[in-house]
Length: 189
Image 1: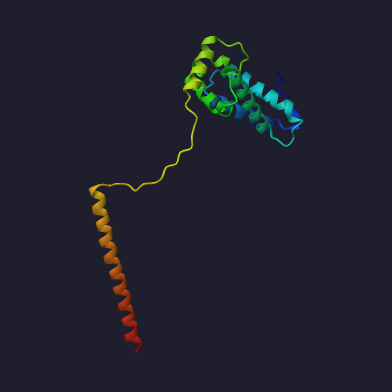
Image 2: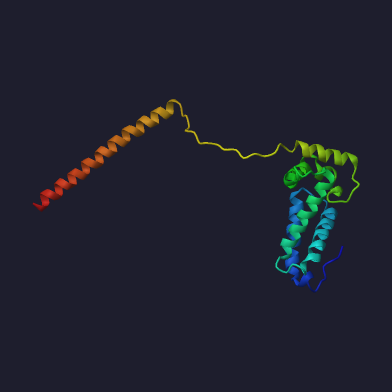
């Protein structure tokens, strides 16, 4: 792992951009409930080191974009190794793997194993695989058609009141319109 030079950023990028990338990656890992500062710092620096290696070859991407891509690659590769992804489950691996982290209580029990190379403790692997299977069935798109609300007896009273009010207001409007026309006719003749 390399360390950022003090005077300039890696890949010809300003050091401020790398600091922003560091903050994004750190917040993401923190959102995954990694609270151990030593583990968190090592992981963030590892991700940034990989992003810096790509920085010179990919000048069109910001350090934050590079870091996020590297972070996703590392996490998905780690999930593949631990959970044994198959081609059928590979598209859901990132989502269900992250859910498995929480269900297996990885942040509470095995923070030091997150993104670590194997071999991992058998209890950890078993907990992750069981949580992955519990993470839920394949998601399916559902369609819900709106239905009118049944308000019971209160709905009937409101509807009757609205109907009567509508009738009275329409009648009043037309009566007023006719009276105005009569008034104009009388004033002009």
